[in-house]
Image (cartoon, rainbow, N blue to C red; front, side, top):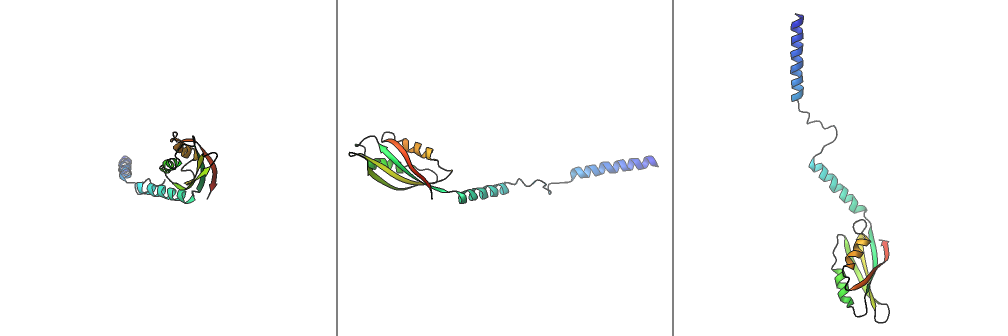
Length: 142
């Protein structure tokens, strides 16, 4: 009789193990969900927070030509053709420096951490046939 009980209890334990293995524990998520929708929502929320907290910077630059024969209007148009994410060109003005030599003073507004002054200077410097140098005059918070 004792042997019969051990056999039954052993069979019961096997059946219980099989039932446990067949149970789906997918309903319980102990460590959070990895759903694509939730991660997309978190990324969108993170981007919105970044855009709300991003400060805008005002940059005033001097663009200096090689000589007095340079067409400064053409240079100004060339600079305004530069398009970058979160870059807004503002007013520009020609200022007399010396004997018939003018420099271009140009204003722009950028978002902090999106565009750096170095990358903006490099983009303007690609017009090296038209200009000698680009200087950042002011860099202020708005």
